[in-house]
Length: 450
Image 1: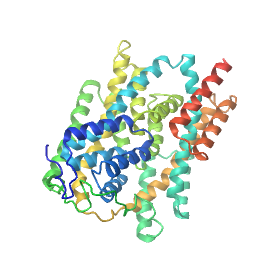
Image 2: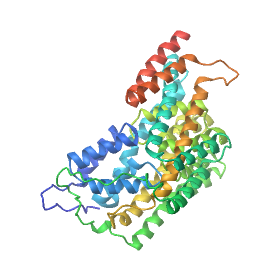
Image 3: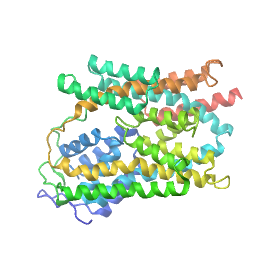
Image 4: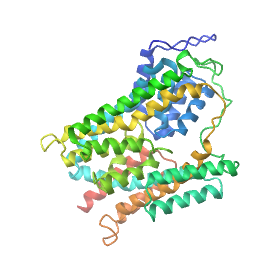
């Protein structure tokens, strides 16, 4: 546990586990801006400022995290923490990336569900909902402009949109189909399917680093079949124990048991970031289980956007609202039910991310060359664009026609959404800044209409 990277010959000071703990805690409290912003913060702090890791080693780790399902920024923190301070270093780094967000979201979810009908709160969310629609649209544009580099990838994106919009194909099947197309395309048309899958290697240098380009992997970062089996056994135990307890207490059809199972599956489908898995979450949480309404899902995404940590933490909001409304612990313990559900789904959502890093890290450290298997990820990323576009239309429908097409068109919401889209896409304003402005406008409009 106390093993750490030895001081390099160039004199960079070693970092203790306690020093790392305070850094990862700080990061968990300031990690706003989604994965791009979070990775940028880590690069600035770890590569440029503190020089704990070199540019090449940082990007090599990031390339691996990009290939995995799950939040890549949280996995990158786990990877670097593990590389520096063994298993506990990884657990601390990854855990502190998530825990502040969990506590904040539990508090915000309770305020939302308990006081959401208060005019002040309702007005704020009236402005936030159209802003979220614009944010999702921006995500589709941002990912599409990077990923759709040729007609083959455009075709995959279009097919995924039709599959989920018109045919209601389950999201997991879309991911599997896109991965298969990417794999086949990578074999038959490698030049067409080599444009995605990670971040290119860089020749930048910010000076000597504690973990430098030529720093050999420490003992714990060398591959061992025994270690791999141990991690797999521990991971299985950490999943089976709480799942077994839920089965014993509530049975397979219990709300908490179904949440644990559903979000375990969601954790394995988050290729391409949180926006990619949100359609799967709303298909299950809204359409199948009825844990919350479409309007509540939009509000939850807004809360996730304005809190630190991975955006996929919106699952904590979904679970809190579902358990709170369904009163799984009875009418006198609704807050406790929501808090327990939020904590449970966070456990089941992020456990695979830790296991992927702790089990796969030694394999990654065995080579610093380019990672392979990017063609399936290229196909998945292309499909994600179509899926996110469908999500934007889904949100737009519920925001602009709150009573359905048979009701009236909400012109104020449309204007707020248009203004938010212009601010994000044309003037490159930040997400939190845009949400704040839209919330203020929405409050004025809502109070004026009432």
